[in-house]
Length: 455
Image 1 (cartoon, helix red, strand yellow):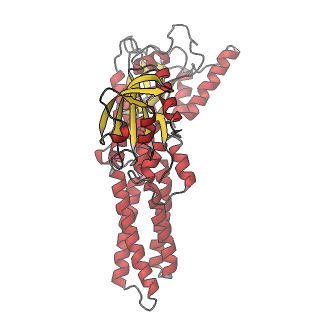
Image 2 (cartoon, one colour):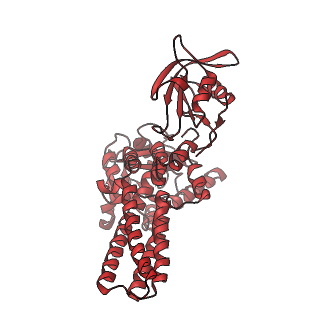
Image 3 (cartoon, one colour):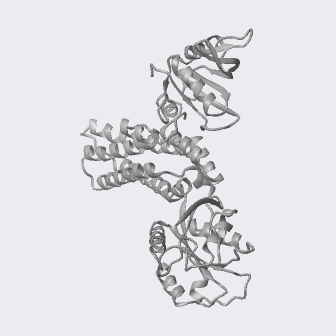
């Protein structure tokens, strides 16, 4: 499908043991021939068998650039279903750049972000949902997120979407057959069967749509603001949750003047913890700005960790914050459990509280359990991991669901079948968008532009 040959560095730039330059396209083997000098008695890439590795040097203008291994993979048994050459060279910015420049000088062009995966999709090796899973896999920050991406890449979601689309197409074919023969009305029994099939499809769409929130959490994570009055132990709590010292801890109130963000894996959930400045009346312009940023972080956060000093009685300021934060998902973190407990919470507040010591680490594991339960009220079921949809899938399925509801209403009202067919077509097309059966160039550009170059 493509006349040009693309190339890119497929490994992160920087110092490392190895770097890989990937080349794909009709002229990939010829491009490799142009810059590869095999070791003694070696063969050129264009004469090598598929899925073999050659040893030699990359050259440019008669000068050796680097000592390399060249993997030759012939179409269609490759990632892009085109001829592919992958050159393993020494790691580091300069060797990889020298090799890619030699490859480009022999006729390849620099690949666009995600262009290798886009070619895999356009050549039929992956559908669109699987292609998106490649990016999810690369960007996954927890084992649970990685597992969900692997399930989608393996086609678990795609198979269910294809089955749904095929069933809707079958119903559409039945309706259009009756349109072609207007003298024959749909029998009541047949109409009932079509309605039953549409209802099952609707139930399945609802099942998929219920996974959207969990899918968003696994892909993007949850923002959790650590809030409270000064010197309650917010920065110490952040350090305990991260497992290393990230924030400065001091007995002097007001040490934290700005928000600090760090991501941690909490029971499989990527949680972006935001350490905020202590909430109080600011004493100077800098502290006032810190409190303002803390308020912004509060507004953006999905959950709150409200830290209270357990060694002191509940203050009027604490009471006001308890009321202010009550409507937002939160955990009350009673810090300084290693000291004599002075704080007493009202009974109705105790269910969402956990006692910790940021000095010894006591209670931190229980707090992590509370955070997990707050995010999704328990553990994610195994069958949900297989089919967690993203925001694009959610939009397409919502449109498909609305069209299916319209179809059911039209059939029950005995409306003309050509109107029923219009709604069914809309449902089929919307479902097809999930796996790329119906796409636009702008949609593909939007999806693959989010990939890294080289993938």
